[in-house]
Length: 290
Length: 191
Image (cartoon, rainbow over all chains, first blue to last red; front, side, top):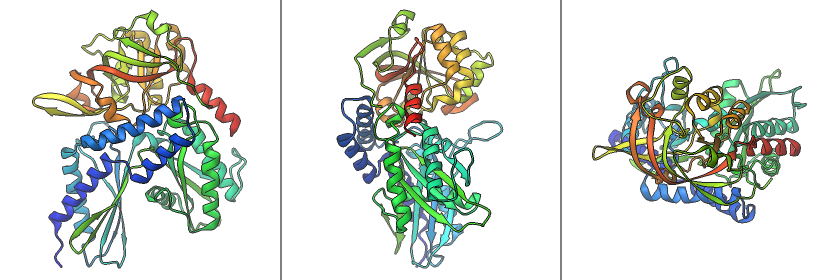
């Protein structure tokens, strides 16, 4: 089958559109349920109501939920029998320019030294070859405010009195969310990777943000830690936007990578409540969106 | 800590010192009149003595880099929520003093230096809901002008926006009280 470059590119533009303008349904459900269970007659409740009202309005108006449409980060699982890395990369670059103008997205790529806007967005793309006879394109639109409160730790940590175990990992996550307060647009989703190297751990932590909130960790110990940390973080009282309340995080997602015996990294990626993540699966020349 | 919301107060720009001094943390406000966007580049510019063609006395700065588009020859804000204010901590105290700004709209709150300047010169911090950008853009009745579009780009330029019933919550008042400080201490105790 010949690769339909045009169809694939326009499907990525559509992926951008869905990701930027509509809240993932599991995230919306979680925010609604937090509103009912946790927060009554308070600023916290009003903030959550505003979040939901805004999400409804964004969908209706086809406008980006947040003006910070983030840095586009793509995780692509491809099969070279369907399309080559080069073909996919070119489609993503073209689609990014089109989406920035059409939707529109905010032109968020800025020259670091001069601070001048490039007038567009520049995507970050990670590739992984699979043999599935399809291309799965997963997009994160990662806001700057939440990116700024991401954190990296090394265990053991004297400062946190944290050892090289899951208890120590927990202390790092608690510290990162405590330091973030409302600045990452709480209630956030926390992606964590333990182990690996500095670079691989950072990417793996980001990848955790792609998981659905209901996705249970296959590793029993990590699953327990995810649930425990979600409860503990929500008892800190930071609340929606850091204005106080019982909903500080929507979920915690943890992954592990093998590590060098000398290293024990804890990398933490913070995602704002928008948690903009969507997938487009290209199979038999057609897109499917989730 | 669950913060209880108090009364809603309607404000009209330019803000008087008296109207600002009467505000307390936890008050909900509904803002009418003009707000001026200013992000990182504009703060640096103002801090270094740069001048803008707008009178900011009694004015409101909005930490926001909106998505704007031209519709029928006129600018329209499509999506315009607050950005993290703490990045402007280095600059804000001087800007409040020099330009006579009476309110800052943003998210996440600001630090000690800004808090002191707010107390000294009569200014408040109004917290808007981060990410509620379409809802807040709907409160912008009109884009009235822009400064520095070419120099700084659309995100970092100063946009003069006419707002109607723009909602926010006072989280730092002119009496030196800060919701952010209270929550920080509370969460430190619970850690």
